[in-house]
Image (cartoon, rainbow, N blue to C red; front, side):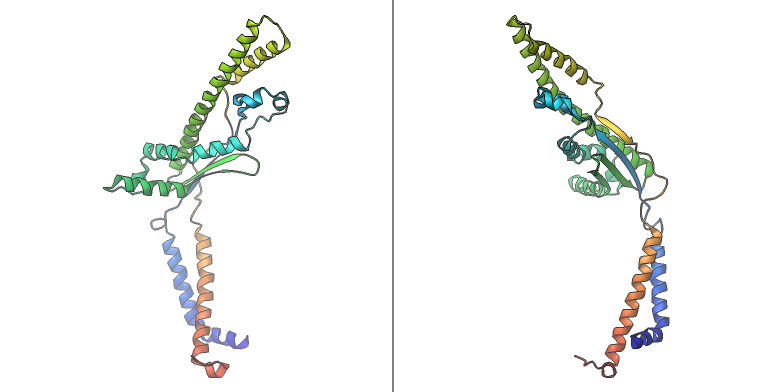
Length: 267
């Protein structure tokens, strides 16, 4: 260990110069005109429970009694699939002309679109957290653009999601009306008929256009502070890595030059 320390001290000037040069290089590389800052915008929300569109749950008294106001795992996965779909991605890419924004324009439009989608997907994220909330985030060099993209992605996805629910609701309403008519035609004013009418009336309320699908916890806003690159961390890692690399290199050089002294044989 003492010999290694002597080697490092012997080469201390070279090690220091190498480390300083590496640190200066990292400082220059992380300058905004070379490595532009990226800003992150987030939106966090919970899905409402679309049980009223589920035929099985609608006619299951035990199910209806203890249902949560928030959507379940299947609902969340369904919405995440929409958020990450090519349809929504292409909608946003075209609306904000991201091909031009990412400087990926070219004669081959199909190839440009492919690279734009790849760049978009590398900056976009939509995940479910441990508490069942959906978090949508976007990174961009333009903080306001990142915020607007998150809003539009969620809005477009919500529109598609509502259309899916509406289609299912129409089917369920038609089924309820048919069963009510059948009961009324039988001329029996029984408990089952009153129950069907009550369910139909409640369902009409939940099926209205005002039905809330999202409970927003955090609205997307333009970020003030950059998300990346973390300049001080890059410089620190560069300094430590270059110091270790330089020290290790000079130790190997000395061991090779004086192999006999240290009991090694040159190959």
